[in-house]
Image (tube, rainbow, N blue to C red; front, top):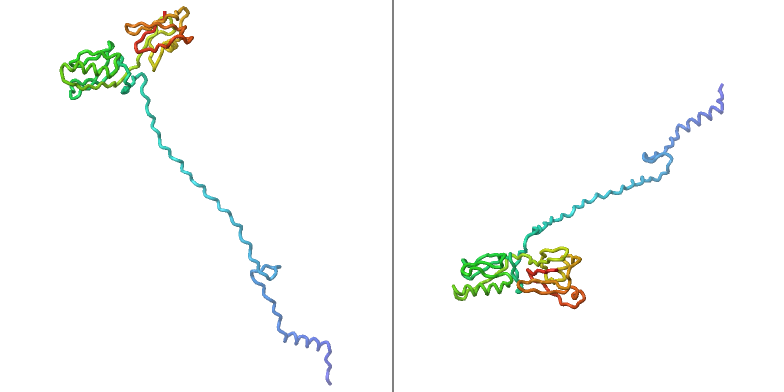
Length: 240
């Protein structure tokens, strides 16, 4: 006698057999570099922000300044050392001269005008120098040497000069010697003497020039009625 198999059991068996013959579905693999939750398009990471380069500080070399050498000033109180070329310069006591006699080194001398206004040379003895120009002194020396030689050739050079002086005395506020600077007249000399005292006689001012005596009226000079009197080295202005 045959047994009947339930229908439900047959259905289960057929389903199991069909599942055993069907290959399992393959799941697509995810790229390793693709993060979970993103689409399949690969996005490259944004570039790293560029860091601005810091310029290196330039080194400035300071300019080198060459040291300057100061010229030392001439000591105060020294006389003027200059070769006087002016033809109208007149010698005064204290001037230093160089007298050259051509081809005669024994007669060539360096001399100084003495306080009495003279110089001393071999053969010529004392020769007046103060008040003369160098050319006039040269002619005087030539005349003296002609007794001892024919046609002497002489050169007189002024090596060192002293400032010429004038003298203001009498009824002035600052009496005494004054340097004769340039072309100075009596009015300028009185101004350098700081004016008159209270009882000064301004109408009869005397200027002594060697053996010569000149008169000067200050009042007329102020009004423009008197010509200026220019002073010479050694002049003495006397205000009574």
